[in-house]
Amino acid sequence: MWTAITTTLSILGALGVFLYGMKVMSEGIQKVAGDSMRKALATMTKNRFSAVFTGFFTTCLVQSSSASTVLVVSFVNAGLLTLVESVGVIMGANLGTTITAWLVAFIPKFKIVTIALPMIGIGLPLFFTCKNRWRSFGETLIGFGLLFIGLSLLKDQVPTASDITGGAADTVKYWITFIQESQYFSTILFLIAGIILTLVVQSSSAAMAITIACAWNGWLGTDPEMVFVSCAAIVLGENIGTTVTAWLASLSANVNAKRAARAHFLFNVIGTLWAIILIVPLTSLIWNSLHIFPEWMIEIKTKKADGGIPPELIKVAFAVAIFHTTFNLTNILLLLPFTKKIASIVEKWVKDKPEGEDAPTIQYISQNLVDLGELNIVEADSALKTFSSHCIKMFDGYVDVFDHPEQDMSSLVSKLKRMEDEADVMMHDITNYLVRCSSHEISTEHAEKITGMLRITAELEECSDAIYRLVKLAERKYTAGRQFSSEQTANVKLFTAHIGEFLKFTADNILTPSDETTVATFDAKAAEMRNAFNKAAMKRMKDGKVKLEMININTNNELRGIANQLTHINKTSTEIAD
Image 1: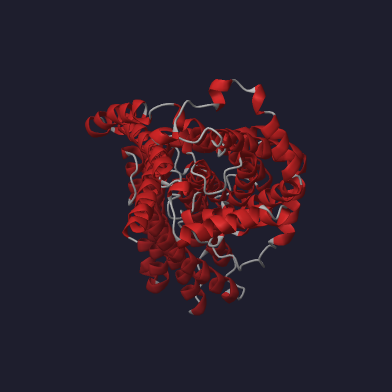
Image 2: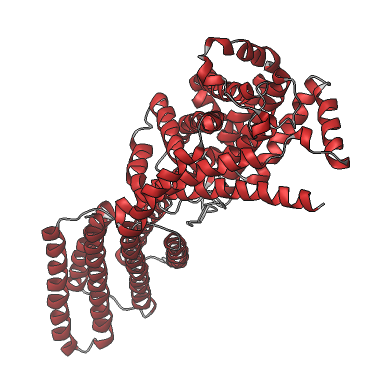
C-alpha cells in the first residue's frame, strides 16, 4: 500500500516538474519574443501557408498547442486575426506540438544531466544577475532544463509492469490485454483514454510523455507493434482532448473567438475520424518503414537490469513520433484547401448574436497552466482602441443632440446614457484585465506599458463622463426652453468640430507615438477657444440671460476638459510606445 502511494506521488512529482518547466519556459519565451510573436501572428497569416508556418513556429517556441490555440482565440477575440486566418494557424499549431514526441523519443539516448543541468547552470546566473531580456532568456533556459528533467523523471518513475504484482496491477494488465485483442473496439477505447488523460493533465505534451512512459514500461503490453497501435490510438484521443482548453478559453469571448475554438475542434475531429478508420494500415506502414532510418536514431544500447528500456519496446517512442508527425502533416495537407469551408461550417455552428446583445467587454482568458501573461496584453490593446471608438460614437451622438434643439431627442439621450454605462463597464473590465496581466511574471517594458494603459483607460472613461455631461447640458437647455443665439451656436459648433477632430486623431494614434507638435496645437487651440468663448459669454451676461450663459460656459469647460484628457492619452501613448 505504502509503495503504491509513494510510486503515485513520484509520478505526480515528475509530471509536476515537467509541467512547471513548460510553464517557466513558455513565460520566458513570451518575454523574450512576445512582441515578435504578436507581430508574426498579426501580419504573417494573410495566406493559408504562412498561417500554418506561423502556428507551427509559435507552438515550437512555447511547446504547447494549447497555449498557441488559446493565443489564437485571444487574437480573434481582439480582431487581429480573421476566422479563416485562425484556421491556418491552428493547423500549424497541431504540427508544432509533435516536437514533444520527438523530445521524448530521444530522451533516453543520452544522460539528461549532460544537457539539462548545464542549461539550468547557464540560465540561473542570467536570471538573478541580469535584467530585462537577458533575465528572461535565463528563465527560458531554466524552463527548458526543468522540462528535460521532468521528462527523464517521468520515464524513470513509471514502474515496470513485470515488476508490479498484486490485485490492482494484475487487473489493469488483464483489461489492457483484453482490450487489445478486440481490434477496432480497442482502438476506440484507447482513443477515449487519450481524451480523458489530456483532460486530466490539461496538456497534450504531458499526456504524450505519460503514454510513451507507460509503453516503455510494459503497461500496454510486450508486443511492440501492438503497443504502437495502442499508443497511436491514445495519441489521436489526445489530439481531441487538447481542443478543450481553447474551447474553455472561448466561453467568455466574442462570437468569432468561439468560432475559432470550434474550428480547432472540428479540424482535429475530422483528422481523428479518417486516422481511426485507417489506423491499422497507417501504423503498419510506419512500423514496417522503421528500418529505413539509421539505427542510431532508433536503437538504444540499454539493459533492463540497469533500469533501461526493454530493447523490444524502445522503437515504440520513435514510431509514435513518426505517427504523430505524419498524421498531423497529412491532415493539414488534406484540409488546408478547405479552410474557408471549415470557417463557413463554424459560422453556421456559432451564429451571430442579435445587434446590441454582444455588449462591449473583455475577459481574461488564460486557462490554468496555459498562461499568456505577456501575450494577453494584445486583448487590452484592442479593448482600448474599441473604447476610444466608443467615445467618438458618444461624441457624435452629443453633436446630433445639440444640432437639433427643435426635435425631441429623448430616445438618443437614453441611448447615450446606456453608452455611458457601457463605458463604465469597459473601464472596469479593462482595468481588471490589466491587473490580472500584471499579477504574472512579465517584463519591465510590459509592466510600464500596463501602467500607461491603466492611465489611458481612466482618461477615456473620464472622456465618456464629460461627453454625457455635455448631453445633459444640452438636454437642460432644451427642457428649459432656452435657445442659444446664432453666435453661441456657431461658437459651440466650431469648438465641437475641433474636439471631434482631436478625438479621431487620438483614436488613430492610440498606443502609438503621436506627433507632439500636432498634439500641442490641438490642446493650445482648445484652450484658446475656451478662453475666448467664455469671455464672450461673460460679456453677454449683462443682457440678463445668466442661466443660459452658464450653460454655455459649462459646455466650453467640458469641451476643454475633453481636450485635456486627449492630450494626456496621446502623451502616455507616446511614452509607452517608445
